[in-house]
Amino acid sequence: MAGSRKNKIKKFVSSSHTNNPPDQVQTDDDNVLMDDLLAELDSRNQTVQQESATVLLEMQENQENTVKDNCRPAKKKQDSRSRHEARQARKAEALAKNHAPIDPEADSRLEKEAKEEEISIKETCDKLGVQTHEIPPDGHCLFSAVADQLALLNILPPNQANYVTVRAAASNFIYTHPDHFLPFLPSAFGEDGVGATSEGFMTPRQFEQYCMSIKDTGAWGGEPEILALSQAYNVPIHVVQGGVPRIVEHNPGPSPRSSAKVARISFHRRMYGLGEHYNSLRPKTTISQVAGKIQSAFS
Image (cartoon, rainbow, N blue to C red; front, side):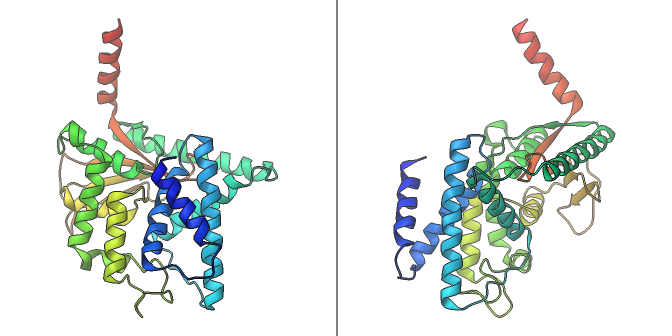
């Protein structure tokens, strides 16, 4: 864990045991820290997972106690980001409980759902002539998957096709088109939370914080970010999934347009058990060509 994040955690833990309400700076720090921790729940390093989960649970408990102390109900709209945070909270709880009882029935059900999803996505990919290109589950998967597609379509040069560039593009587009996105981004604190308007929309400060978190942290990306990227790069983004419909289309304009350039990514609800994930879908011919070049280089 980086030293700066260690200091943030120490600062949070020490402040959580005082009776003084956190000021705005502390709240902002906590939001950034939470985004980082949520991203690290997808790490393949079990030590990182465990450490992040433990701190997240303590932060969540502290927030719940604050709500109770203020006697204010915490009502939260179920937008895509809220649902993701709820799932990540459940993941944190599961990771933190080292001695949680084994539930064979639940494990079997999840395994079955994961297999069915895998088969469904593969069927759709076969029809499209594409194949999954795995993206690391590091909290940046959506942006890395889109970056990979933009490189394949020659929309971004390879040296710029990374999650940093794509995160910045999504953040900038959302920030410069607030009227298009605010209705889909309810206040992070809920309609009755501190700082929320009567309509439950984000305040200007909250909106700015949201955009900055997309750009500078490991905050999870969802439907708003996919739509923003489709419009920012003027390219349709098609998401293949195991549910219905099999393909969710995001188009840069009000009506679909015929184009040879379509970015294709896959959305996996069960691929990693407790978390959701995006992968890039490359043409099978492209994957074969790359594999052939690698094989030739070592032969």
